[in-house]
Amino acid sequence: MTVRSSTSKPAKPYKEFPLFAHGNGQWAKKIRGKLWYFGKWEDSEAALRQYLDDVDEIQAGREPRRARNKRGSSDTMTVAEMVNLFLAVMDARRKSGEITNRHWADYKRSCQIIVDHFGRRLPVTALRAADFASLRQSFPKSWGPTKTATEIQRMRTAFRWAAESEVINALPNFGPDFRKPSRTAHRRTAQQRQAKHGRLAFSQQELRTILENCNGWLRASVLLGANAGFGAADCGRLRVQNIDFDNGWYDLPRPKTGIPRRFYVWPETRSAIREAMAERPIAKNDDHDDLCFLTSHGRPVWWETDKGSKCDNIGKAFLTLCRKLDASEHIRQQRFDRPGRNFYSLRRTYETIAGNTRDQVAVNYAMGHCDDSMAAVYRQGIDDRRLIDVAEFVRHWLWPKPSAPSTIIAPGKVDSSPPD
Image 1 (tube, helix red, strand yellow):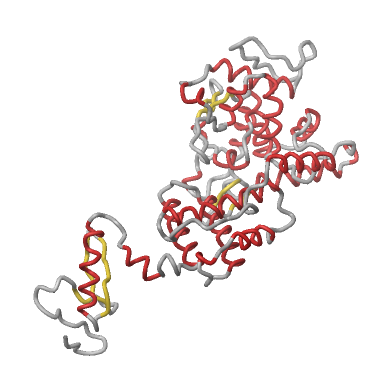
Image 2: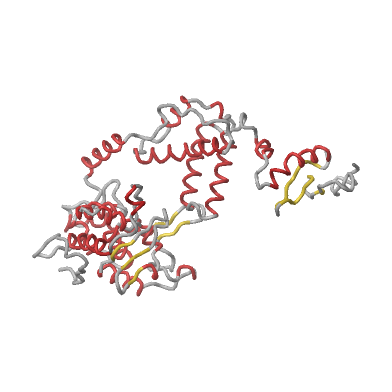
């Protein structure tokens, strides 16, 4: 084969040669709508051999094994190469909507911890149980059992994916120490935190004080948290069409998990949402025009970037309010800002109070909780009367009537009278 110049493309070595010279210096061919490269111009015979080795797998829709071998065989696969392959697959799942941006960003951070601890060039096959024990010991002391369990689960997922995808020959031996903390450790930590700082859930008086001292979209968000355990992200994503304002129903699967969620919306909550919507400025983005809550700058009160970072105006405003209330001379006997307490504590409050109805199925449905029981497989829905009873129970706990404080009203009956 004769190359005309250092930059010009060479001619095919013979007429029937199946590849063409690509401008990047390699022999290539388009197969199943995708361009594949098989070797440098200088060695057309090697490129042809590579093509013949790979073409059957490509035609079958599979990734040819040589693509993995270029990055390193399963025996020499480095930690950095493995996590990069894993993150590439997770990124594809993110783009297809299979996982959220936040989920992908969490995987990326966990993989970065793996690489930082083990180094980029260490072969995965060199990892031993002692190495994973050392990795766990490197976790910050500030991490509690929940954070530690989440990180370990994500890291193990990356290695498990590599083994199941044949990127590495076998799953490494994690040893006895690289496991999620036991339930006992979770309970002990929760008991110690509560003994030192108090409960994370809000009392009736605390929640009423918070509602009396906020307005606009923050008050509507707090009511949604108390009404059905809405988190900041739930409030930020809430759109006008998600709520039946006439009949008082919210019915939409949770974006995080896709689990069905339906609950009865209090009259007070609907009224607060309407008031917040009446004060909305013009949205900066047309896609946000139907959001219930917007900041004074016309942006969502909670939003997430493509890279998984978030801007939580609801959480910030709620924390600011709690600190302001703590500084107030009139209500110093209460402590709103406690370690671990935030807007999500409204969800804890709802679960705690609503659980007293003894209808956990209805509570789970309102909160969008996953139910893996066999009963959930056979259950084909839930009666709206049960959802109304749960919502009204919490409502009457928050604003009790003197004649019948914190009692469940008659099934299916909705008390829409304003609180005293």
